[in-house]
Image 1 (cartoon, rainbow, N blue to C red):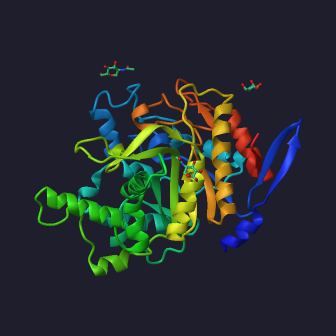
Image 2 (cartoon, protein in one colour):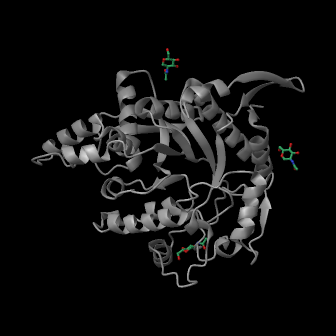
Length: 394
Ligand SMILES: *[C@@H]1O[C@H](CO)[C@@H](O)[C@H](O)[C@H]1NC(C)=O
Ligand SMILES: *[C@@H]1O[C@H](CO)[C@@H](O)[C@H](O)[C@H]1NC(C)=O
Ligand SMILES: *[C@@H]1O[C@H](CO)[C@@H](O)[C@H](O)[C@H]1NC(C)=O
């Protein structure tokens, strides 16, 4: 769909409730809402029906102290057995069921240094396309160039995109140095994936900087691999859309001397400033991505984790509201955003945090052998927004 149509569909009216002045943001007709989970985090059934251990199964059992509450995902929400109930939860919310389980687990494995991985992944992808291709309209691959570059998607009717872990990097000041540092932070964390796939090469800042550093360190050429002309042609345009996982923004200050061995968050000379940068970062990020790459954007993850699992989760409602509104504003700014996905449908196994951090619209009682699901206030709120097709900022 043409993005202009989107723009026309979005308009804002001021409404008034109980003396309070509220902005009402209408949601474009074709804009879709969904919720996400990941197989590893909810399914459990770690050793049933002939399932072999996955890398993550082994990782979380072998390395003691990796998980805050020393838990594992062996049973988790038991969705392997309770999937019908979970589908009823989706039906209640009235959301679309998009992109199922493939990305999360594999992203975390680090197994991609193995040269055979693209081949295995290709096999896996073909199986998924064959099995679900008639129903799944959008596919997410991994945060991985090789996989996209090396296998062929022949016969897939859906669109293919990639879910990116993103952040918005706001310059800490209007100085050229900070503005460039923020751009560099983007390039080294997001652009290094999106630039090759949509423009055919690594970002300029990355090529220049890594080449300079490599020479300084006595290398004969840049440590950054160079694409051949053939590879550039092959990968350019390999994404139909960009998937955005967004949880926070940060402010970035330039750092002149970048000591090696610093935390990854220091983003190659850009400094992660104290304090976050609010949800308006999502609007800026969307607009930046759309202006830079001109492909549709889907918000593949956004949500709030808490330590309590409280049923009256008004703070989660505020968080979702504060993030959905900037998306609607970005659409109004002219960006083509197609959908929004809440992480997550149900409380689940949150990697190193185990069951101590809860993102669900539904509470799961992990002490109950039946893993009872209970809707939180946010579930009812999300259902309402989806049904009424507008959202208010008060
Ligand atoms: C988890 O296990 C580690 C190492 O065995 C132990 O030091 C820690 O106290 C445990 N934590 C909890 C919450 O049980
Ligand atoms: C940068 O300049 C703009 C426009 O003058 C201003 O609105 C903004 O607050 C400035 N940002 C910072 C971080 O100083
Ligand atoms: C939920 O919390 C809000 C804000 O603290 C409060 O106004 C509301 O009455 C609570 N609702 C329920 C059902 O407890």
